[in-house]
Length: 133
Length: 133
DNA sequence: TTTATTAATGCGACATTATTGCAATAATAA
DNA sequence: TTATTATTGCAATAATGTCGCATTAATAAA
Ligand SMILES: [Mn+2]
Ligand SMILES: [Mn+2]
Ligand SMILES: [Zn+2]
Ligand SMILES: [Zn+2]
Image (cartoon, rainbow over all chains, first blue to last red; front, side, top):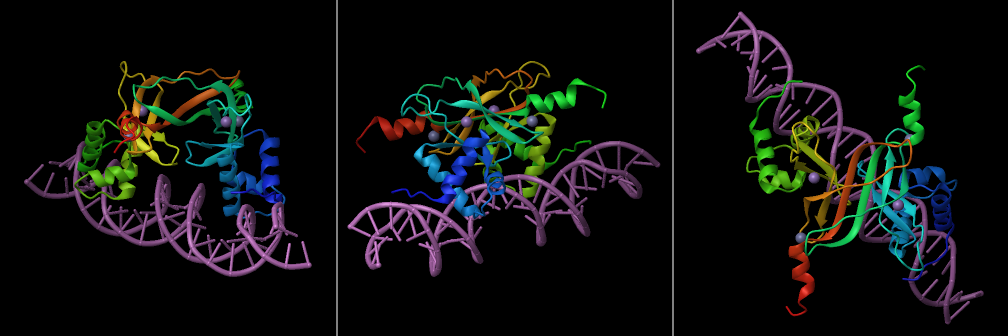
């Protein structure tokens, strides 16, 4: 199906690119100045995923997060990589770390969803390092 | 809090152990002969998770699946491992494959959730190998 | 065995997330 | 300018998971 340019699509993609992180539908809705319906946001995001400009991550909270794909070489699909979810500042980011694995005979992988959770560097230093304050 | 033995707990744990797979609340509810309330199943499962006898996996479908922990050595927590979800027969299993990764400075991991999706050996042979039939 | 304590359960209500049908709108082609 | 149809908003719906509360039942105490 042919695609059309719309303010909604531009705003969503721009936000995802600028943030550099994986965002939930809710975060997107809040961050964008123009009001966009929830259903529309999902439709736009799923379209981006289908077109390969964005990828979806499902975190342990069961929610969907979306991040722009950083293209590797030409049309090659983005290499599977880990994601990190900070449970303190509640942000999800794509890690450089690639996901490596081997499978039993006959298994065929179609998609990879790997999320590590814990504290990011900022939050871990805040909470743990110093006892005082 | 002290634990009590109940038919519900026994049935759920027995089912998980026998199946050898990660099951959703729905699959558990259907597979058990005695009727158990949904809320109860979740409470029992979360209790098992808390006690370390079961671990939770969140798949790309956003649902929670539960599997018994195969204890390694003594009280050591189960080593993080990959999970495989067959999108054809819709089953999730724990893989032997351990999850290895390194993190940027300062990051602290609390939990790991890695799910590979695709076709298991049974389903891939059914669908792809032979063109006929 | 009987009684007391409180963990466990069922039920309904509730919160959240995500999807879908449909009519109205607007981007793009003709 | 007009026609086509992708896109959007809105409301309804499905699905997952949690919570409060009264009741039941497992276990300890008498
Ligand atoms: Mn990513
Ligand atoms: Mn497992
Ligand atoms: Zn953080
Ligand atoms: Zn299969």
